Length: 218
Image (cartoon, one colour):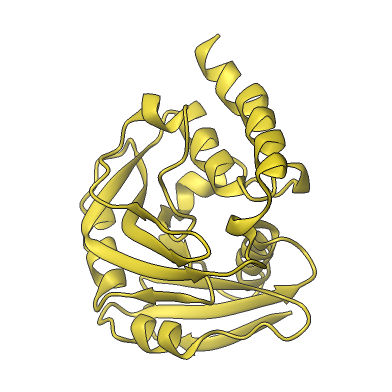
């Protein structure tokens, strides 16, 4: 189900928050942080029983049936705590980026069940082929997303669908760009996708290596 949360005239970007059916809501910190930006944007949520990536794509597709999509789209999870002007800074970076840049990503840290930092990591395609250091909460050029055929949504890669997307971008010749002025924190819990079991992660990791990385190096 598509819901419009905020719609500015002459929106420069579309913010999509995927929600899982059954009561998922956008956190107060996320609402406050995202609204603390000056760039005109439209914010929608899309709720269904599908995985996060699928809901992100369905949000874009269903919004496009009604309105024109802005030049940039970004998925914003329901439970992140972004720094002030995160969207503004990412927009400025992507607006002034080279043609081979497909998306702009932010610094972020996990706290809670997972404690990890992904800060000041410049884009490196060879590093990306080994492991993911880029969040799904990244700003993407709409024309690039359309060109590659949209995000990866197959449940067999669940937990690593964002990594699949960046590798798919790489296959088409597109790189990411770190926005060093953008930062967010996310508190993970035992039920979060990122905090799943180790065995499950290894299974998905090997699938991604076989289906996305191997074609890039052979």
